[in-house]
Image 1 (tube, rainbow, N blue to C red):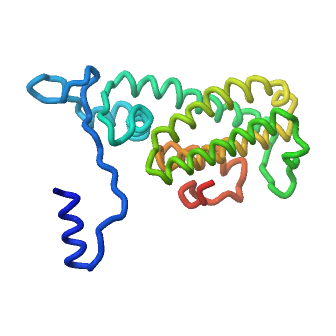
Image 2 (cartoon, rainbow, N blue to C red):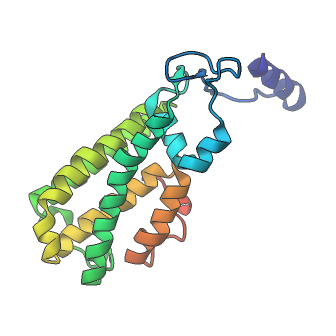
Image 3 (spheres, helix red, strand yellow):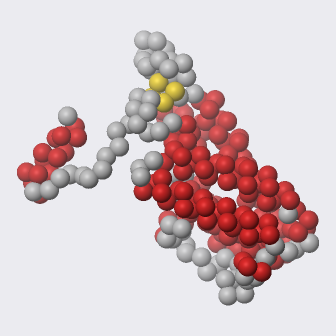
Length: 228
């Protein structure tokens, strides 16, 4: 009825439909799949949840856990797990870059950087994975399907960027390898842009504290950049 009402008003007032695409959310259930209610005592206070875990972590958990149109089994412990596994890994990767970028005085200069084709195989591999991620995220977001996009970003951060690229390139960072720093910077910058629509506050903080420090010529906000 609400969808119809918007169309009726839009047609009468503007002689046009109110929207061309719409996503209708499913129900938010408790962790056992029951409808939340005060009578059952299984309702979750949204304001307390946001105060404890933050808006971005809550939003990320809901997006990555189930498609928006499906019913969601909401578990507070799931938000905490997302914080530890995804955001914890992401933060550690950001911190790793920041440490070695500061030690070596690294400043990203696109006019004076090692071309990708001249970098090592593992550099080119992670850049390839990054571009595959961009392609998938754009396809899913254009199709109003954010859940696979979020899960793909989780896989990229946990499996490819942290567990493989950073772990197997540690010696190069210890040695101040500029190509490694540039590659990791590019991956983190692009990832921050990809994450921005879903976790706008974390993405903006990262942009200000990490990306703009390493690249003073970067736009003043991640939300003022073009999507990759």
